[in-house]
Length: 308
Ligand code: UDP
Ligand code: MG
Image 1 (cartoon, rainbow, N blue to C red):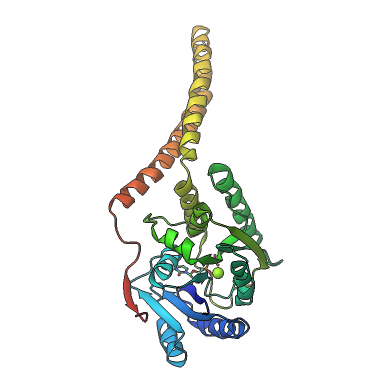
Image 2 (image 1 turned 90 degrees about the vertical axis):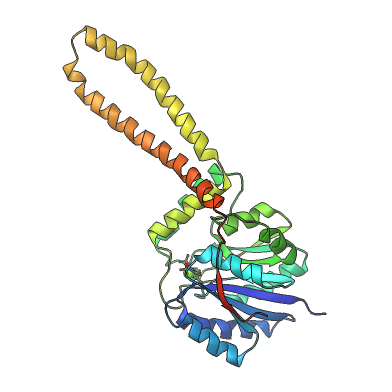
């Protein structure tokens, strides 16, 4: 019996990308012997994405979609897709054709060799913005030094997962999903392949700098409490330093140098003020996570679906 493959694609305002993407996937799938379905997760798009999906589905019943009740974000949309469909193999990719479907046979080959996860590592195209490249390198370095898992630089949500991995993954109930970290965390036999990322086919990236920064912070704080230790160490170091500073202050007082101390006072106040705010911020992020998690809200809400 042929193995069943589900290709899961989150899409948020990707109306003009969906059709070319489906064409390319079906071309590729002719080259391999798998039954497959394509499951789009419409993540509360405000353009014609849903209409486009309906039209495509009329022509090809291997195309399915889930429509979420509003925009829940890329990671939740992907989770919704993986939770909703039963298959032997799952492949996730972006709707904007930055993840070339032509790599699917290679991913499947990894599965045939017995790997449970075949993930992809992006080699940047020469014309990618220096800014995105630098921020991404910076993020992976920080992530790897602050948390207990090793992420490959440039790993994205373009990967193959076996039914076992997805079953493990479904048990996760956590709010701030950072899927590429979780997939690394679940273990199993994993393998990477590299590819060159394409430009977005059309439209623009939904990850603004602010969203990227938030995503990075989420990634770090979801996988480790090390930043809390960093906060403690910093606090400790500076209180030791200020212990050294007190004798100097007394000396300055005794020898009448009080007025000239104004500068150092302001500098110290400003410095410690900043440090305290930073540490409070770190603690606040974790507290916020606990707060959100304690509500046990669903990660996403499905409004309609073509899956029976
Ligand atoms: N996406 C989504 N919900 C969102 C933002 C993005 O489902 O709130 C989808 C988007 O349609 C695309 C993928 O996630 O298929 C990656 O998004 P994007 O291309 O904007 O990110 P980038 O490639 O710039 O990191
Ligand atoms: Mg993209």
